[in-house]
Image (cartoon, rainbow, N blue to C red; front, side):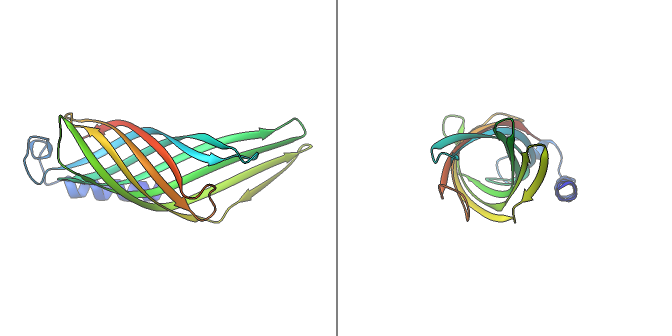
Length: 188
C-alpha cells in the first residue's frame, strides 16, 4: 500500500513540476492542473448478521490529480466492527482500494456537478476469539465497481464535495449497494 502511494505521489508531483502555481489556479480558463488530497466519511448500506440493512460508516482518504474538468484519484476506505460476547468475539476489518475518474460538468452557482466511475478491490479480515483461542481469516481480494454523481464547491484551494454512489462487488449483500460520501480537503 505504501509503495503504491509513493509511486502515485511521485508521478503526480513529476507531472505537475513544469507548471507554476498561477497556472494551476481556478482562474486559468483551460488546461489547469492540480494535485488533490482529502479525507471523507462514507455511509454505505449493508446487511448485518440478522439480515437487516444497516448504515456502515467508513473512513476515507483520497489523493489524485486533476486536469481541466477531469479528476483521477486513488481512494482508501476502511471500517471495523466488533460483535459477540465474552466467550466469542468477532472483529471484522474491511479495506477498500479504488481508483476513480471524475468529470466535472461545468459550473453552476459556484457549484460543480460531477459524474464518476470507479474500480478497485476489497479485502476483508476476520479475527475470531473463542474462549481465549484466536484465529484469523482473510478473504481473497474481490473486485469492486461503481458510479457516482455529486456536487463540489468551487472554492480556491479548498475541496468540499458530497456524492451519491452505487457500488457492486461479488460477495456484497445487498449487491449493488448505495451510499453517500462527504469530502473535505485541499488542492494545489
